[in-house]
Length: 357
DNA sequence: TCTGGGGTCCTAGGACCC
DNA sequence: TCTGGGGTCCTAGGACCC
Image (tube, rainbow, N blue to C red):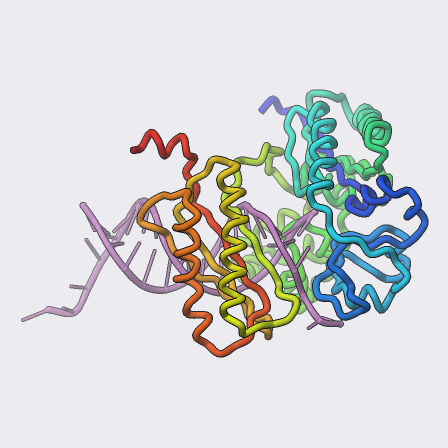
C-alpha cells in the first residue's frame, strides 16, 4: 500500500446484446429490439436477455418473461441470443480496456472494473481518461458504454448505472455518502430481491436508511451479511480489482419446450448435455472429479444431486454413466420435469494429473 | 409476471480421520 | 457402558451476479 487514494472505473456497455445486433443490422435502429427466448406469439417460454431503449419505453425489461414482453410490445424485432458473436465482440472490448488499467477485472460479458490509480492524478484527469476510453470503444467497435468513477468498486459500479446510456459519472470520496443515501438498497452489490424484501420489512428502503440503522441489530438479523451491509451502505468497500482465476465449474441446462414425463427423452437430453459439457471440459484440458445433475419439476421446485468420484477423469463415458445414476431418484417420482442440467466441477488440469500418475 | 442459462460464493450438517 | 475436539471434505440448497 502506497497510501495513495484508489481511483476505480466501472465500464458497462449499453444494452450490449441489442447494440451488437443493431451494429450488424442498421435497419433495426430506431425500432424496439429484444434479444431473448422465442416469443412464439406470446406462448414462448424463457425471458428477455436484453432490450434496447426503444423497447424499454414499452415497459420491457431484461429478465422479464418473454410472454409478457410480447403482450407489451408485439411489434418489436425479436432475436435469439447469439452468444458466440457477443463473446467475440466482448473479447475485443476487454482487450481495449485492459490496456488502460493497472489492475483489470472482467465482470460478466459486458462489464469490467479498472484500477487506474497510478495512471491519473485526481478526478479531473480520471475524467479525461474515461472520455478517452469511451472514444476508443466508439471508434473501434461502434458501441457506447457508461463509465462510473469512484474510490472503490462498489461506488464505481453504482455510478456507471447512474447515467445511461453513454454516461460518465464521477463520485469523489467526500461525496460518497451523499450520493448513495437517496438510492434504493437494491442498487447495492449483493442486495438482490430477497435481501431487499427482508430489509423492507424492518423499514429500510434507501441506502441512507440502511446507513443510519443500528449495526448491532443488522448483525443480529443478517449475521455476517449484516456487518457487510453496514459497510456497503457507508460506501466502504476494500475489495481489490483482480483478474478472474480459472473457472471452477462447467455446466449446461435446458428447459424443455413442454414439461415432460417421457423419461427416455429426459435421459437422451442428459446424454446430449453431457456431450456438450465434455466438449468444453476437453477444450480447456481439464479433468474433473465431481458430477452434479439438476432437475426442476413443473412447479419450479428445483433439486441438485451430486457425486464426487473416487478418481479423476476426463472421459465422456464416466460423465454419462454418473449422470444416469444420479438422475434415477428423480425419475422414479411420477412428476413432470421442466428442466434438466449437468455440471462438472472439482477440476484438476490434465498436466497436473499426468504428474500425479 | 409465471419465471433462461451461465456462473460464483456461502452455509449448515454430516462423514471420516487422527 | 454412551462419548472430545480439530480439521477437512462432501453434499444440498440458496442468494447473488450478468
